[in-house]
Length: 516
Ligand code: XMP
Image (cartoon, rainbow, N blue to C red; front, side):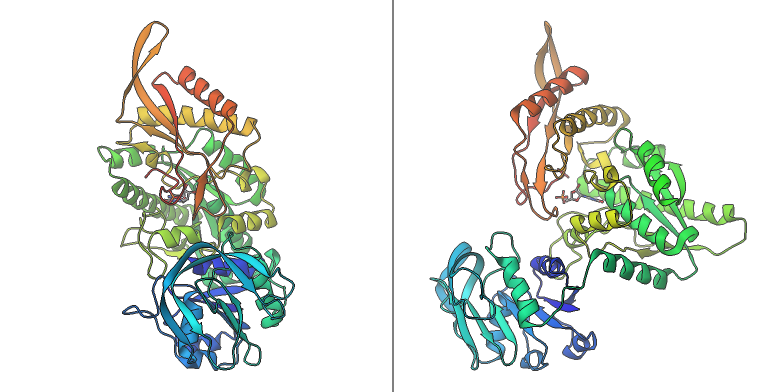
């Protein structure tokens, strides 16, 4: 494995993922982990991530020289690069020239890291301090206007570092650099593949669950389906999948789960009609965090009830259900404040929204993966493309796409509008280009319109088509005007209560994908 030492940057997971894209297994560890513990994992290489702080900042995570005396090839990125410099006796200075964003780099192409790459590269920077002198034994291998030493290497000790971020898409040849470090610098072999990921997860799941009973909440989305399929493959009939119809689903959702998922995986399925329960719990609530917490809590209560039924239906007086499978993904974890030193943006229902008195142990086989990796796992498990390539749909469903109080009538309106938007986007062949397109009902807003000869006083909806690689960042999709026109026409004609269709043209950041 390759250890990615996390200094509290949202970039750590991205680095881990880029390593895996080089077909090398990677794992994230906190920077507070003692070096012996890191070594016990027998890493083939160590990568130090960027971090939010300056090496001079108070409370900045520090790195002792012992980390560089392990003999394990090590790559410092951004903050990690500066921390390495300081630990080994180089000099980091506050220079006047901060560099943020795209920066031109000139590289020495007879070095290990840059061999075979162009001499001039456009790279992504984000730093105030700069390395002005590399530690002894190191050779400086690149520079920019603001960073006299923008990369260095000590090939004897197999230590490498760069000031910029090779893991972000905006850095030219970033992935090549990653590959150069892993293959040439550290001698790793590309043996980590989807088959391995699946095999490792199956083994882990079997180890965790043993011969106990387990239930899995299916939401109709990709993640829970893949998580469920994995666990089914691992422990077979010990698993019962529970599909909760909370009344916040899209049109046709329940039918699709029953049809596709069960047919392919052969899993036991229990469908729970919980609309009444969720809607009465949500009555009168319009605060987004409160909605999310209520939905998270009700999910768990329904699972508890379902678990009791599974036991009594088992008829063998058998064991309790101890485990609950959830399709939690890494972005859910990070954005709910679960990463190290990251802020709580919103409580994704299956992380921050869990009640304190949870009686299950969670099984979250996708917790370290990004969506695109999950899709590959799904394909590997033989799930159909319609299921694997569906638009992501949040667990709290349409509940967080109605701005204002949630009720049956509003849900019905939104469900119709959403179905039209999805249908037209699919018809235009845009499903793979668009990450997802929430339709948001501004239920407390009314606007005046005219239809036929009459005045209308209806509600606006917002179309929020976005493109994204992993939902951590996103851009608004440039959907062709004629497709937008068709969606708008149909929605305002077919859904009586809606008299206005608007388009959200905000990237993430600053906006999140969902409105709540
Ligand atoms: P945001 O709105 O945070 O969304 O930019 C990022 C991605 O996550 C989905 N999302 C959720 N998924 N439970 C989920 O399973 C949740 O509580 C939740 N909230 C947001 C969202 O649809 C987008 O794909």
